[in-house]
Image (cartoon, rainbow, N blue to C red; front, side, top):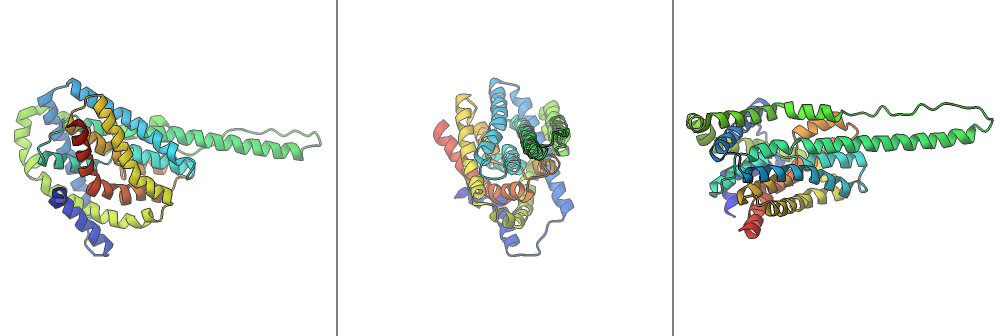
Length: 345
């Protein structure tokens, strides 16, 4: 219960309540964007400072390996579960969103763990970036396979119709192929790696790493004193956004609503098992669980509009932001922390 008395979480709840009540409370878009950029920069610097102190150890490599494995496993599981229950391109898009990560959930969990005296390694910021692209790659490959299968099925059906109709012996040539929509895997990877949020985060990690203790002292007012307050302000804005997206999410098919609540628990449990097998430190494992249980509602949905335009945005965006994000913020983070404590001690 102490977790729910955290001011940042309470400001998130306030935003949800205000948005649900149709209050005119609003955070200007440019302010929200500034807060997002600030949190990414502060997170990257914190990670770089911590990484400079710890160095590249076996624990660091184990954590990064676990992150990459989960980044491929989660979207494949999501697609396998959903492909026969919703339209397959929708299933691929939802798999991409849930296979990727939420930076806001990660930052919130990081702050809460720090308040509890659990200090994850700074390399987990790198792990977060590594977990962003694989899900998109998997989804693009799946979407391409789905389109090819549809095109072949259409050609076979058309060929059968023409064979019946063309009994006179006349021949007609069929031009195969499909001008399937979407982006190439290479383009997706490039867009992911050069995304402004990733550039800022990774650049900040490198700056923090190379400046080390001296840089940490100089940036302390920005990365330390202001961080908690600005995080609370940003979560107020996120609460308002959740209230706006709750409607489309609640109108989704029941199977997707169930998935949006159950999948985070399954993914977090898998991450906990993997962290245990690879001897990942407890604090790092908790963040790995949080990342695996989260879903992207910013970077991936923006890419999906071009990569899988046939998919319904109200499904993958509404579920990620309207259901899974608030679930993780209020229930998930303390639950994953408790689970890791029970299993790993």
